[in-house]
Image (cartoon, rainbow, N blue to C red):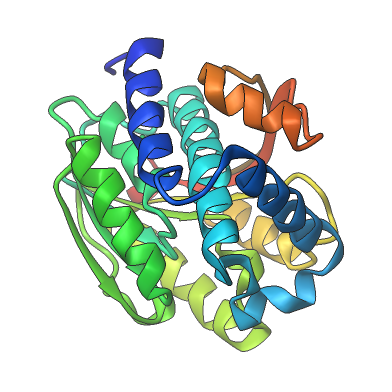
Length: 256
């Protein structure tokens, strides 16, 4: 499993910052990150309306903070689960956002896997295209309903990172059996969500379903290893992460 240097992460983050600070100042992004954090914690009912990506400031804050944050968390989980061994052909990123979860898994695969991503947001798809290209990951991305994406193939990894909690109940109920069916056909399925209970009331039922199918459920805490400029943004916004935390469900294809 390849290891990626802190320097590579720093280079990607520097390019990301140059992209978004071309039209916004650091204080503007800091304020937007504070507003975005408040939205996720206190006003989650507004997420379905697309409030997280409303306005250039919030989009930049998401791209500069939550995208790289998700990259780092998913990368650590993939490593801990040995989820890139044996090598996979492609990663299907459901609700791909800015593409960083799929990229994190793909980059861990020996020889690198391609990414097939789907998201409802046109802005997110554009951002994902830029991130994956900058990180050197081949990708096919499209705008659409993640619950309708074709699933289920050998040598395929499916990741749903911080996406299931934003679905309505009906869509979420449609997605679960499709993920279980995909794993039965050979796909390796990884679901990642926040550690807090409030955003994930569905988690006990999903955990039971994954465990019954031969999967596992984990709670993770990893030391935060942010690029220096991301660390500055984190501290300036009053978030000050010391540890990265998440919960995950993992179901290897064919019960591996």
